[in-house]
Length: 294
Image 1 (cartoon, rainbow, N blue to C red):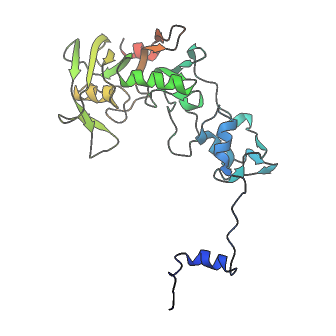
Image 2: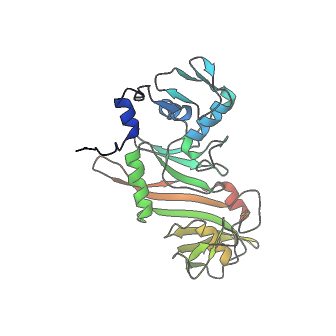
């Protein structure tokens, strides 16, 4: 009787058993990491976009050799040196309204980005000074709060999401609203014809803004604005719909020397001794706002 066995199901292993070949050696080489990721850990005072800019500019050496590619990979124990010339360093941070071990509240100037656009961002952003909690448009000035640790960032962000914060803005608008004060209750949606903009749309998300006229002349009005929702471009879209666009709005109105929108007050709960402390942070109105509506 002839007995036959089953065909070996793993020919590669069969060849190893027969001595025809050897198993590949296990890779025991140390793990390597991207240079920009290593620098983020070494220099938390900068965001990754800024560090990538420094690498591409030749400000970083690895074991004494200049490396200009952020995605170059190295072992974690290499010697990395960042040598940023004084002319390339961040400008002084904006005026500080309040600071403690958990938060930093700044008076953001018009023109400063909240966050980097894309991987290459040669200009400073709010992220260079702390962990971002909420955003103001580039051309909007005023109160902005940053966190110093992830736990505080999560706590503060949740308040914005749950509408537990109270914000007051001032704006100079073209013309005059029909009523001295009112609640604007108009839904907002993305403008599909211009995807970077928004518009009043009956199928949009609910959006409410309370306004009050504080001062006006024959051309402009100074308004106090209190949004109860936080839709993107909400104030600008609502005021455009009333035919009183914010002065200097290059998207929804006529451009001027600056966007006349200022985040004046922010009420929020910050970490405190008893678990939380309610605070109101405020800043002075830029003098040009009053000058425009004299």
